[in-house]
Length: 222
Image 1 (spheres, one colour):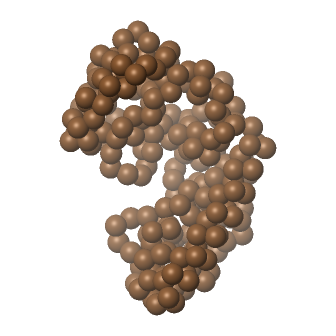
Image 2 (image 1 turned 60 degrees about the horizontal axis):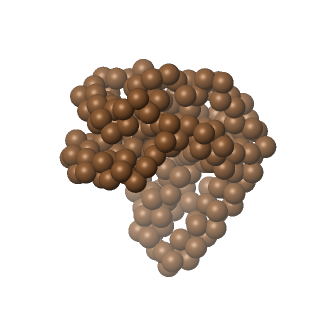
């Protein structure tokens, strides 16, 4: 899989990035190998992955003492992983890691994704599980909504981000290396033979403005 790095320091906020890196270096010292920000095209908080040589209880306690300040400054709790654990878990979390690889920025150290490969078979099995789980969720949610337009609209709106992520994973499975969120979503929709209008609505629902209840009911059926 092609490693992509998205340069968007201005969007991230250099103060946030600097604060996070300084805090992690204060905790781990020379055991801190690299820090990357991810989820750069969605969400407001700074999400990050930090690879370290080792993680101890003392490290967790030190990070816990900084948690309130991170939350105040719009920094999500960093994902902390020893380097070897990260390498061994690529097959267990192929979708999650592939999404981080798709859109990330190196904040500290070397790019940890250089030479990283996610096996297509692992990605295919994970996509199948995600698709079936999402389908079960939509069926159950529809029943629980009682068939009311408002309830279905809420279900579709709440499910839109997960459905968009599902389409991007399908795109990745089919060889798309698009770094842009909308392009990757549309690539996945084409692979799944979904109408382009459905994808347009899904992308719109990932933003604060939602469709009208009637439109959401139509979108659920499609």
